[in-house]
Length: 210
Image 1 (cartoon, rainbow, N blue to C red):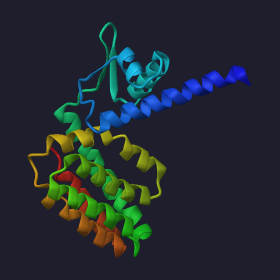
Image 2: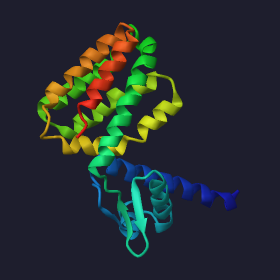
Image 3: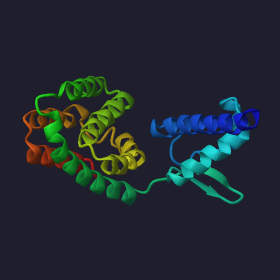
Image 4: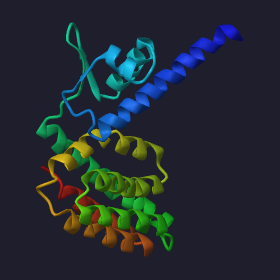
């Protein structure tokens, strides 16, 4: 048993390092272009470099980190075209999610209302970090409500580009006005109006294309 304990602990630590770096990247604490130094991360997270190296490899596989010989690892930089492409795909995915999720939310939208209210509160405070968290949670609830794992996985893969666009757009849009679409989407889902919910979601996401 003792011989197997070390790999389990190592894997567990690598996963914890990955999740922490993932959180920092998605929340903007490690913006695109940030150099990721294994030794520095290991010291910061009180671990050895092995789990950090494994975590960086996994983040590279997720297309969040790039590694070049003799240059090390960095948070991937995203081009304006990549952001536009991501929003085209996201709009299509959410239109489908709205149609599929409508039966699930018919007459049962309390969780969506809670997230929409939190998003509105953050918008009024001009708290972009909170707005981003609650806005993403609102939309993810809808995608999850579609009960299609492939759809959810595809949507999750766009989180990096989406959060970057939200940060870049902080002075471009009136977030209080933008979030008003959430309430129309909730109304359509509560009534089980699949086509209307899908179109509202598609239009709402398309408005954020740069």
